[in-house]
View 1 (spheres, rainbow, N blue to C red):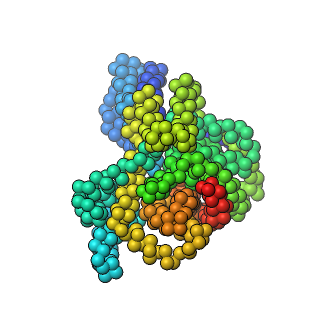
View 2: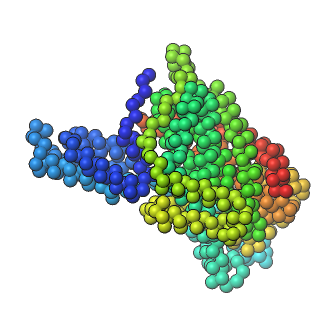
Length: 596
């Protein structure tokens, strides 16, 4: 089977979401100049716009061609000379089609199409009423079970309402998170007057941790501008293109590395675009294609454990710990995450090879009998528009690396007043020097930041109302008093919860309880560190993490998906069990050594 020749337009549209205003202006000028040399008729232009619609998820073909273009001089007979008014009309039409404003709109749509794995459903009033009804029932029940604790009762109702809104997806997750602070003030769940409560809750919404997340977004833009992920994939293909199994391992290690640098929200989006040209020539039911996409998802889940800002659940876990006056430094985190994540990704790779051996369709078995294993012939080269590494890009890249080093250094953090201050300084310098544009800054996932902030406000309300202390006393009786067994039990509970609930939501809701229980046994830092890892360990269901969702929705050129829920269950269940076992054995021993 011959390889499909890469389309130059494919690469341009793939990279469009990563381009800044200067790049868009250059693209506009190139497109305008191109019209001086191209003779188009209506049918050719219709096909061009149709392809743009397919790539960008737009519907300009019907509006532009059927309504506007057919009424223009372009709709005249193709035998008419292409000059004069007809040529000028063609140029004007194409200039509008590739205008900077239209390209900026395409860029925004391309960034939004990937999303961040959060709910995009509109508000569902039926599900909201269900959440309100169940929260009201919980309030009635708590009135009998918690007499004399009105603040705890109201906070329990708020907690149940928020959790149900998230689990039922009655509204976008970030909208529910924004409701937490005003509802907590209205219900009077904390001490002090309502003005003081609102001040504390709103301060918790946009807390110090969110500046780290913002700096992660900026680093993501810089690394994408440098084409870091594409260059790394091309290098891996040149080294391991003839050894597909080791190429899969290399892609998984690259997924961990990019998730550590960019966050496991951004890295899967970039990596799946790297893999698509590689697996496009393989049949859609090829088990090697599925193994690559599953490996990417699992490795990005593991990469979400690497740094304190590589996943939203890490940020939420650290914020819950900071509310109790404790912290985990970047150096401590990396000392545990580096060896643990390497072991985890190797184990995931070995399990995928085992599943790969049995995950074969009848059609693929017939092809193997006739033609042999296509994946064993080698991995096709990575094709992309290689851009020159200018001095500006090198300086930005060096600045991002220096900032990561400052995050990991306790002395540097102390000199600037903390990692959040360093993060804000880095963002300010990048914006002030033009490293990132205002449009890029405005396109960041602010809804994700408000989701994290709403979870922090909910944790503050649960703690200040006394509900957390009350629940801790109830739960403590059923848990072991031994620090090792307690941490193991909490870790397994978190792995089980995140198998069915979003990793981020589980961290937002459960990590304050983990901190409280760990503090009673004197192991709160270890419990939070391993608990944060546990929140990223579940791989069995595709809807619980963004890397899983990103691989699930990947489709071939005909719109057919490579993966289904069945494939996640086959490979994800043993991988999740292996990660859980690794956490309570080697993870615990490493954690004790690092934090001591």
